[in-house]
Length: 386
Image (cartoon, rainbow, N blue to C red; front, side, top):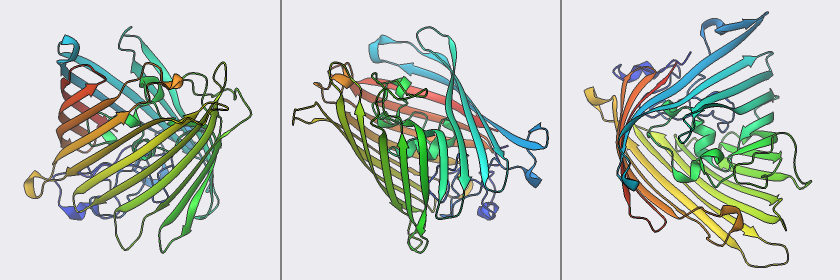
């Protein structure tokens, strides 16, 4: 069950690592791949696992094994001027999150998301994560299965439940593959990670996984179409001298099995995150390069976003206004991104934490895609987690 700080309680309620409704952020002190989303406290120290229950008892039991189930979801009302669409109600995704600690070192995680296809109105189920983890020490943690790619830190830290993020919508470069996202945000493989220098907060992650499929939304879960595996190396630092700050650099290499010839893919990303004293500042920049065999020309696509939010002080501390600026620049000659267009957007909004586990968000978004006129979107969202 998610134990979220009451936004109307005094700051002392944060003692003991209770998550803060003021600045939702997920992950763990080692880099956010522990599996269970963890909300960062308003003070800069990392919070504990909000999915843990008192006495270690889970909500479900299989024999002597306790299994914790957590649920995230959202309900939206949206009005969009682009393409002349009218306002309407939307069922958001329903995220079921199972975790099991089978021994002091071994744990398992399953994340199953139910979402509605906008065109057909059919509800589909997506197995977003399936992961086994072995914790040897602070220096070494091993994970196997379907994971979130550390190439995009937003998804590593905030995962699928929209309650866990401040904004009502995700930045363009963080979109999931089946929602038209251009970045490989899921991988199926193995990862080693750990903290090397505690005094500097130096963290590493090395992933070897199946690469992309022949299509943009083809996540290769049942094997790999070629023998050239994707490799991801992420290096980060969270210096104790600057509490709440985390800086990360990530590189990714792969070969995409396209017809008639494969594409060589290289991706670089830089990420900065600061969470302290009511301030939330997140920013990422990433560049994708594709090359055809025997051709020196680089097909380059890039994107960035900057999010700033601030928890209001005093009796208004349940309110968090925010600003999100973002842009994606797509190489129009890239065959792998055929049909994708440049996009830029600005979002203004406010998050209101009604009580632990329930938040209302109001957001105005102005977005320009390709050569089409800019569109305006107003969204009211009820997000929950329990």
